[in-house]
Each structure stands twice: as structure tokens, then as C-alpha cells.
Amino acid sequence: MTHWIVAPIILPALLAPFIVLAARYHIGIQRVFSVTGVIALIALAAGLAWSVSDGSVIYYRLGDWAAPFGIVVVGDRLSTLMVLLTSVLALFVLLYAIGSGWDNRGRHFHALFQFQLMGILGAFLTGDLFNLFVFFEVLLIASYGLMIHAGGNTRLRAGVQYVLFNLIGSTLFLFALGAIYAETGTLNMADLAERVKLIAPEETVGIRVAAVLLLLVFAIKAALVPLHFWLPSSYAEAPAPVAALFAIMTKVGAYAIIRVYTMIFPPELEVTSGLHDLWLLPAALVSLAIGMIGVLAAKKLDRLVAYSIIGSMGMVMVAISLFSPAGIAAALYYIVHSTLAGAVLFLISDLVRTGRGSVDLSTEPPMLGTALTAGMFFAGAIAMAGLPPLSGFLGKLLVLDAAYGNTLMVWIWAVVLSSSLISVVGFARAGSVVFWKSHGAVAAEPDEDRLRPSVLSYAAVGGLFALLALHTVFAGQVHGYTTSMAKELFAPEVYKSTVLETPGKLSKPKEKED
Image 1 (tube, rainbow, N blue to C red):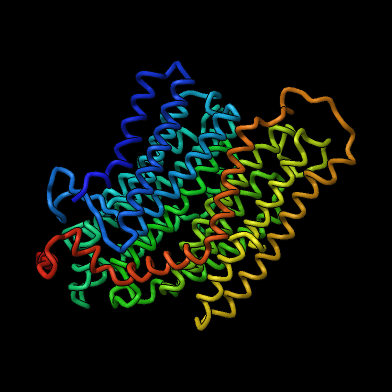
Image 2 (image 1 turned 45 degrees about the horizontal axis):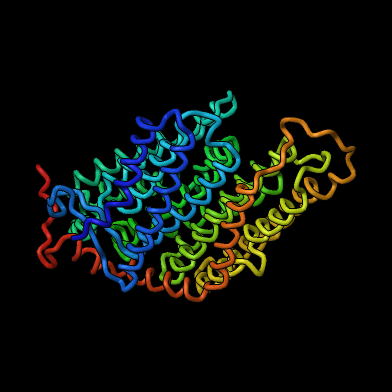
């Protein structure tokens, strides 16, 4: 047992109230502590990822209560990778928020930002389903506060819609947890993986219902069609740094599907046979298509980016729904890419808003800093559309290769390739309207809504581009790592034996009363 694995949860949980109580009226002090805390998170996440890079599993027992009776925090290759990705993304988003002044347009931005990190990192590190629900609620509350940061009726309406949809998901989550506990008597994921196998075939109705409910909950978090309606307005109306951080939140749903449906309800399990391929793959293909059609039809740049997030999640879910080591490895590579690319595009849309005064896809006079912002948009569009030479192209190749031999391979290839073409047209249309046709418009004097973005804002976006470049250059090493990770996910014996500490002595499900 190691204490370091719980540090990424404890650190933001302590920083947030400290910022509120000791520095609420001093934005400079808030910025210093917030940035320092995120840098410390990156160091912690890098150390944890290195410690499990050999395939080992580390854990921490709260109150020293052994699993499955006590709460455990678990770190393996998958969870530490997601923690590291979140921490690195948070640093550049935070720098952009400081450079653009977004953090000073409302109250308690930095405290809510830290609570949001606590919820996201806790969801990645928890070892039981109930605490996954708890951390979902923590990030939901913090994300609502961040979404309505700086106020406005439109932002408030979008925030209410976001909360309502996610509260529906939370209610379904509680129903699923109740059904699972009634059937097995535990919510620890490692223990559940063994107990579900012991359920008699004639008594699988309850656990099948729970598995379906969990899939619905995670599909809501991942914005999978037809449960995606909350995302376009919510992400488009949120402050740009908040929307950029939200790029990782849909990945929490994808992570939960990977974790639960490779360990607790794997494809070969008879109890949930047919659940993986009969519903998830078609929904993923439709999500990919609708997301990219939304890119083509969008009338505002921020809404275009929001629909591209739906499309990228469709691509991720296509790879996940194959439920093979190759598919999961491709999904994990693409998760890193799409998180960085989505965050970049949200920040670029804010650069456009700052220099142009609006994000409408209409012809207006040239914005301040047009050349640099246009170049960044061009690179971000290439990344999200999946064109060479950036990592989106490699990620899509990996997904197509993983789908080779699948019964729906023709549909997968057709939807992936056609949606890529549609996204190229959509991004090209937006770029030409905002940056090219603007030179034919009548020049206007800059006003308070037309300012030059700060150097720190450009530096933050440039840092994310540097990460995308590294993700491309080291694609072979990253994919090799995700391949090893995927193999472990389909053979979780090390995870289960480490967490439970009693291999071969797992308890049976409790007997049902007559």
C-alpha cells in the first residue's frame, strides 16, 4: 500500500477551501497557488505513471480497511495515464484563463477549478462503483459553477440544461448501484469481477438490468447519441477555458466503460452477452456521423467545436465498442489526441472572440492577430479532422486497423472515412469565412470587444500544440504502451489480486431470501 496514490485527490481538495478562505479577495495569490498546485499534480501524476509502467498496480486503503469492505484508491497504467493527461491539460487551460483574464470575470474560479480536478482525478482513481458515483457528483457540482462563471442568461440556461441531464444520469446510476448491491453484496470493482461470474444463469435478470443502466449512465457522460443533447449548448456557452477543461470530462464516461466492461462485464461473460456489440457500436457510428454533420452545419465557431467533440467521442466509442485489445489500444491513443485537439479548438475560438468580437461564422472585418490565430486554427482543424501529419490521422488509422475483420467493418470504414471528409469541408468553410473572406469586409475601428489576445494566451495554446506534436512523433511508443495496457485490461488478475490481497479466497454472492 502506498500513500502517494491518494495525493492527486487530496491536493486539490485542500487547495480549493484554502483559496476560498485565505485568498478570496486576492486574485494574484489565487493564481500562484492554483498554478503551483497543478504543477505539483503533474509531478505526482508523472511519478505514479512511472511507478506502474511495468504493469504493477498500486493502491491505498482509506482508514486501513481492507477491500472489499473499505474504500480503496487504485492506480494502474490506465488510471495513471488519465490522471497525467488531466493534469497536463489543466496547466495549459489554467495559464490561458490567467492570460485572457477569464479567471477574474467572476467569483471563485480557481477554487471551483480545483474541485473540478478533484472530481475528475477521483473518478479515474477510485476502486469501487459507489465512489465513482460520488466523484461524478463532485465534478458535476464544480462544473456547473464553472459553466456559469461570469454570468449571463444564456450561460445560465445552458448550465441548467447541463445539470438536469446529468442529474438524470445520476439517478440512473443510483438505481444501477442498488441493483448491483442487491445481487452481489459489494460495489468494489475487483470483488464484483469475481462475484458476477458466480451468479447462476437463471438469476441474471437483475445484474443484466444493472449492466444496461450503467452503460446508459456512462453513455450520457460520454455524450453518445441519442444521449448527447446536453453537450452542444453547454460546451458552446461555457467560458472557453472551462470548455477546454471539459474536453476531458467526456473521456470520464469512456474510461468508465472501458474499466467496467472489460473487468466486471467482459464480452465473454454470458450474463451480459450481446450488450457490447448490439447497441454500443451502432450508437457510436451514429454519434460520429452526427457530430461531423454538426460541424458542417454550425453557424458559430464555438458550437462547431462542440459538435466536433461529439464526433471525436463517436470515434473513441467505435474503437471501444470493438472490445478487443487492438480496439481499446486505438481508443486510448485517440483519447489523448482528441482531448488535446478539442481543448486547442475551444481556446482558439476564444482567441477569435477576443480579436473579432464574436464567433459568428459570418464575414466581418479582419481580427487583431489574424495571421497567428488563423495558423493555429488551421493546425487545430487538421488535428481534429484527422488529416496527416498530426496524431488524429494516426489515431484513425489505428481504429480502422482494429476494425479489420469485424462483421460491421464495411460500415465502420464507410462512416469513419465519410465523416472525415465532412469534417474537412466543415472546418474549411469556417476557416475561410472567419479568416479569408474577412479581408474583403469594410474595416472598423477596434472597440472594447475587439482586443489583441495576450502573449500568455497564445503560449498556452502553443503548449497544447507542442503536446499534439509529441503525441505524433512518439506515436509508436505511445501505441505500444496503450497496447500493453489493453492486454492488461482484458486480463485483470494482477489488479484484482492486488486490491483484494486474498487471491483464490473470494466470497460468493449473498444468498437471496425466498
